[in-house]
Image 1 (cartoon, rainbow, N blue to C red):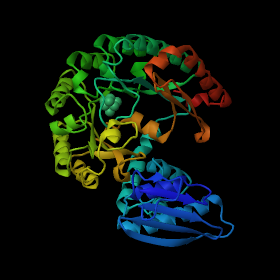
Image 2: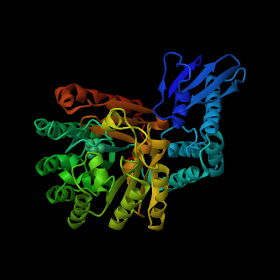
Image 3: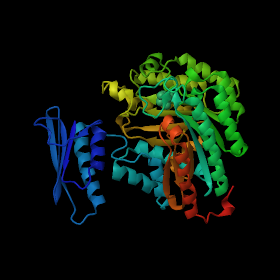
Image 4: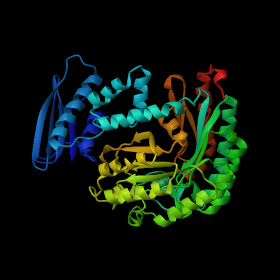
Length: 486
Ligand code: SF4
């Protein structure tokens, strides 16, 4: 499917609307050949002509423009007209309507903060963006559940993200900057040492600024891809440089059982982590093989029991709906299998097709299971006591669906809420790390680390110097109220 848009001030949002119905549709530089599958928009002064042709069928409409309307209002009118046309033409009724933002709960918080009632927020989602009543209900439920978590954050709060961008092998759907352990054998030891130095520098910076550390998240990649001794050394640095006993939460991703053993799980526990994540993605051996995992479902279950045996009391498990070779029935079995283990958190992602992933490069499109049915199967979580506590969307997700974190009472993953709702600064260490500085009034600035481990090591000095921006940022808001400091 091609997108041929001409005469418009901006094509970004209309392209998004077209891709809700035709994922992977590409902009065309020239008018598509006669009879080709395409969506057309042609902007004029008083109206925009919209047309679609697909599989020999076609439809068209005229979208009137209100004279004197702002660019924003005109763009919305075009999106809405196009959405109506494609909805009728395809017969699809996307559950998130034409909502483009990746963080609907964040939008709900913003509208509520402006003084809108829950009903008014629901109306906004349903009438402006055609979001289904079920999704709106979910958004508001999560926004309500997040309120006490958001209240924990203070003006001088921050969280710390530590990136270990190595994995035992590359999953087919992954586009992260992770490197396989085999590709990076010589890099891991110097990387861990550099990371320890960066953490010491961040700790000194945070002390100078009087910031209070709320949560730590060691992610990746797969942090347990490094040796137990390296993990121990890294976590020792965290313990030496930061006030670990005062943390509200300390998470380590122990994502894959093919590099997570009893020794590493014990190190994680002994060094003060309060939460781990073991991520099956599926409990089907066939699907695991299809996504490039070199372990079985049995290995995941064994890893989980080992984690319990060494004392982990808060465990998250991730599942992905829509993996290649999976079916709605297969996904439901994976979900039941994970629920039977009774982890404190279950996070259900919808598969996202990322351009840099092997899946997009190698896979035949269109062979994914019924993801809407898979997500609908998650209603059983409620009966088992799991409540949704955070939700976000990504571009390129199958059927434009969402990712949702569920929790048993008392185990909300705080870092996930803090980062998603941008309530405080996230200082990031390691390759691919992105520091997000959050100031009063939602003012946000970013400082990026180098993306790949080799670049990170080569440019380490310059990268540390970039962190100067953190001090400059807080210098602008030097009137932080010390009474709110923790
Ligand atoms: S474990 Fe995660 S980061 Fe590593 S390759 Fe798989 S999806 Fe990517």
